[in-house]
Image 1 (cartoon, rainbow, N blue to C red):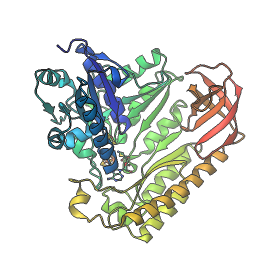
Image 2: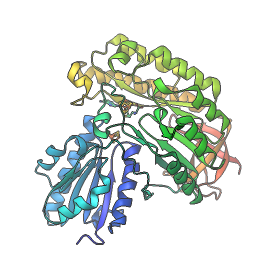
Image 3: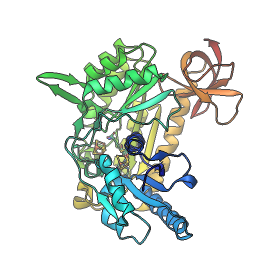
Length: 444
Ligand code: SAH
Ligand code: SF4
Ligand code: F3S
């Protein structure tokens, strides 16, 4: 009955979810479903969801309300909720009164065809079992999100760090690493297909570890193996936990110029008292020492971070510590959030969410304003440099311009002189904004 049924996937949340959607597309295609990139043509709509903050979940509820209204107008569609919110809120989703036929957690994607057979039979179907082993390592993802130049590769799943504010260990389960041979094969295949950049993904890539009969592959080992595929293949990784960022990794980065000069190192707070409550297991001093080490090995390396404003009991003094740490670390860019309590987490059980909303908002604004200045300064410092840029495609703003990224992950826009996505070009930087560099081609 489901033979040839058209399906559409909508993805929210982090890169891990985008990568998972490519796995889901692969599983369903192998089961005879047909992938479409337009919800209007689909008989089955899957929503791959995120639970990281309350706002992320509110957005999904809004979307489910819309889809429910759409189906009530006699559109014969099936609706499935997958991903982190499915894991966290299975019962609420099934009992919501909205049209939700299927709920599947992040480790249940192999059994989607079976679940969909139940749905075809008129039942609601759900599977939110988490696994200690599943890595989907034998599934060849369908790269439908991709620009044909850069791609993600999941190298591990789950997280066991239990940062006090974070829902991920509950939605994604035990940490497990994927067989390095399958990772290297996937990267090599992508390179052969014309891809020029891969980003190795995990919630804490530094704890990647594969033990095959006593032969251990660590994250630095894996990075080296992927980087050795070709000097023309850029390699990135995200995200590393500051407590585990080792000099071994930095040395491997130095020895491969095609490992990108950019590190994402989420700091969350600059206050030791708050870091302790957050269960981050490093101090401000440790963090700044890691930053110094990155800069020692790679003076041209960019640094990005995540910051949470208004965590439980955060005082003006704690906030001032975050501001001063931002200045000391001089981040090139940052993702900045207001603390959002998530039920089930350590913080929700132990600490009251006691920073008033307006205080959280004011602190977040101050953090964002400072980062604007730091980003502007970092980009201004590139003016006059000639940087290697990997072309990704046309600029969104103007078809006469191309856009690409530097090794430091900065976006560069420059006049189109006929280069194609996947080309490396040398661009002389002539101008900047806090978000973008502008330039002209210096050489190809
Ligand atoms: N594993 C990654 C983080 C993944 S979640 C790491 O540790 O680097 C991405 C970011 O969302 C986190 O770094 C944090 O800054 C933010 N975040 C997570 N839980 C949050 C919450 N409850 N409220 C606000 N921000 C949160
Ligand atoms: Fe969440 Fe911490 Fe794990 Fe990152 S390391 S996913 S913040 S628990
Ligand atoms: Fe969201 Fe799950 Fe990623 S909660 S941030 S989609 S791991």
